[in-house]
Amino acid sequence: MQKIFENWNNFLKERDEGESTTYPPELSADTVKLYHYCGRICWRTGSPDTVVLDPQKGLDKPQSYSRREYETSRVPRAFFYLDPAERESMVSGPLYTVEVPASDIYNLIADEEEFILARKKEREEEGSKFWHGTTETPLRKGEDWDPVLRAIIGAGYKGVYYHTGFKAVAWFEPIEVTLEKQEEE
Image (tube, rainbow, N blue to C red; front, side, top):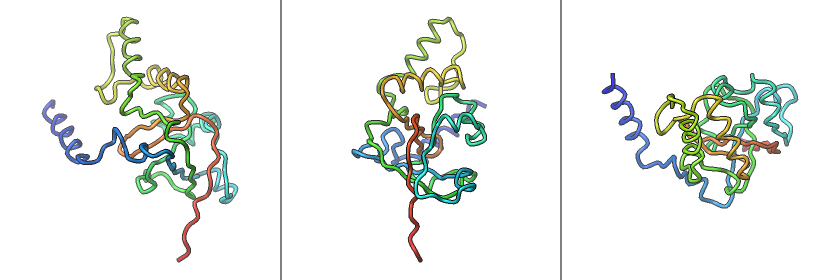
C-alpha cells in the first residue's frame, strides 16, 4: 500500500514539473486578477455589472460553499480562481473579476510566516498525539484550519492563496467584483 502512495505522489510531482504552485507567476506582479463565477446570486438577479461578495453571507448559507470547504473551516471567505479555465466542473454562472494588490494575498503554499508550523507547535504543546496528514496538508478540518486562517487575517492579509488541483484564493472581506464582458462573435 505504501508503494502505491509513493507512486501516486511521484506521478503528481512529475505532472506538475515545470509549473510552480509554490510561487505562481500571478502573485509576483503588483496586482492580481481574481476570477469568480457568480452562481445563485446572479441566477436570481440576472447578471448585474457589479456584485459585492460578502464572505459572511456565504458562511451563513453553506450551500454556496462546497461541502469540503465548509467542513475545512468556518472562517468566512469568498473563493476565486487565478485562472478561470481551471474552474471546477460544478462551478458555473457568469464570470466576475477584480484586481487586488498582490501584497494583500498570503501565499499559504510557501507559508513564509510559518502559520502552519506555529499551529503544529501549538498542537504539540497541547500534548496532542494526532497530527493529520503530510507536510503538504497537515491541518485538521476546523480545529486547525480556523486558527491558521485567523492568524493570517490577524497579520493583515485580506486573502490567502492555496492550490488543490487548481490555483485559488480565498478572500476574507466583502469585495466588489465586475462582470467580465464577453467578446461579441
